[in-house]
Length: 385
Image 1 (cartoon, one colour):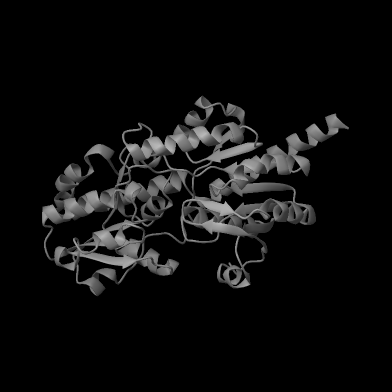
Image 2 (cartoon, rainbow, N blue to C red):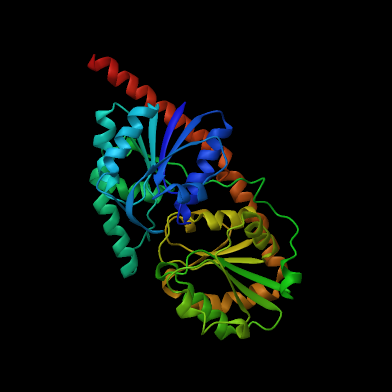
């Protein structure tokens, strides 16, 4: 099968990781993948190169960030030409939150190409704050256009229910969660505690942005006075990093590592951690959370998005988004002083991923969806002849 994948390769974000992991897995299964992404020039394109046998096509843009992309005026023409030349069996768009997302159904219909989308925007199931309300508006904006896609993939049943309520036909919305390579992300040895002189390690990994609510974690850590032998590692960067770092530093046992590009180093950090904390106000389905769970780390996460669904029934500890700092002031000392608790939760977290969130299982489900869409396309074409 030949899949034209439309997605992102930079800047680094969950969408980039999703596209890399899924397309590499499809290549491993013998499919042909053409990766169409926004890039300005050959230098950027080569910097994003995966090293896999994957044909790449760049689309011009005016601006792109971790959140959204503004294509150039000729981007749709470049895309149409690329798809006409590639002649894929289907198009899979890992939506980049750009105006091009709204034109894709019309473009693919003109070319008689089936169109699948993965819809990533985070959300809070209970709409408890301004950030979650803004994200809900994103779902309202996209729903009428998503109804024109052959299939829309979301990561949780909560997302599916939300889109269906907003008018996307239920048969067109498929739940295929994020998946983890459980062989790569697995429990193992790490030198991290020795490097940092720590006895207990707590980790946050993700963007340092308002919706991630990192300051609530930092405040709780600082007020709890965790002691010299416990460290909080913050992995990632974002707009709030420079604002927060001066107030929450090494004197409080907080270590800022910034963005860690080396995947093996990120795995070593997770293997060395005792506890992974995700205090987000809104989420989709956090791949960082799944990676930590797969490495056997005890996890604390808010019930934003689908994260609460991932760790429910004892696979982790669920935090309420409205009381993160207060809850953490109670939980942090508990997890510091009881290694047996983190060990037990880490085992349960790993087992939850093995049961529900392996990359292999989810790629199989994706392949099945592709074949269903192609069969529907063949039936449609035969009736129109």
